[in-house]
Image 1 (cartoon, rainbow, N blue to C red):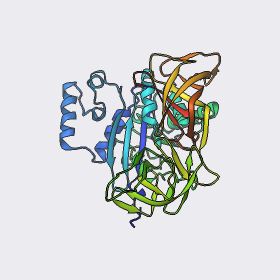
Image 2 (image 1 turned 90 degrees about the vertical axis):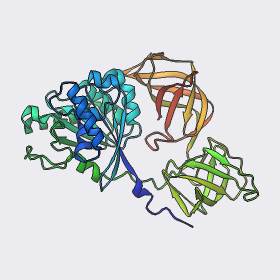
Image 3 (image 1 turned 135 degrees about the vertical axis):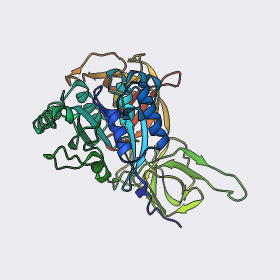
Image 4 (image 1 turned 30 degrees about the vertical axis):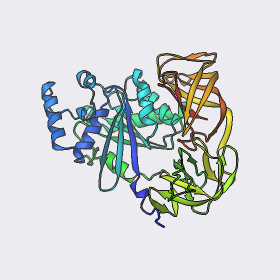
Length: 423
């Protein structure tokens, strides 16, 4: 048998950038790619040409991420731009998200898979409405690591007093709104000039911390939970061939934990148990598999298992099953969410019909107030709602497991209209 040694070494750190309009998000990412030598020569030439055509005196590194024509023309970020780069120490996926309020849904999309949120603050303006909004969303999405990048320090003469004032105001905002963020790191920088982005700045002698890239390279990955193994079944493999006359395998991507040959597993819903007899990655046989690996599992017993079922280790820590529960939702479409309407809900590999029973409250991002008595939600609204499904849903709370705690709302046209987190 072959084992999984080295698989976790392939993990990537995913981070998202967010902030108010013109805080320099795209410039920061462009500088990060440029200074870490993660762009090709033809890409740089294209950006130089685009900068000249727009009348820029210097190379506009923001154009490395603002890929849509409308973005280039308006000088804003509209869509989420994903970029991949690697250093000798780590691999990264960046989600550059918009700062405009009307594109809040795009920020939610980009942050939903992030390990770290980099929230930019313009040193001249301090904490703004979008700083609060994006910090709240980071808390809502259970992002444990937040980096507050105090940008454009060159425009305030690299003032330590200005930086400390922003640090104090941000901590006060977190306390006021009771946001659940475990670790916050503050870095003064100038993305335009590259101060403290990849290399430490000589122009900020009072700061002795790491640059942004140094910090991201050394952040520990969240530890895998010892309990809570989850394998949502995506496909049942039945070759029905002379070579494999009786093969029945259950394919899926591990959402948490580990599985080993010989483990006793429980099938949810239903509660039937069996023992793992084989683990396969393509044509390779494994002794164990770990999240987020995709594997095929064979079991000792012939059990009725289909897409949407979840395999977990047999024990006290099994997923929940229910038909009614509360979720925090960000509504993504102009057509409002309405109480009493039915939607298709996609959850892991399961798809069920659900009805909105009630809107418990809508959250005012700016004041943190909860508004009761609401019967509909508009685009970018965030609220807690109660839903009921036509059949039991196998899930974990979002803060325990992002995969098992996420819900996507689909309308009759098969369009995504809402992103939700199970409480």
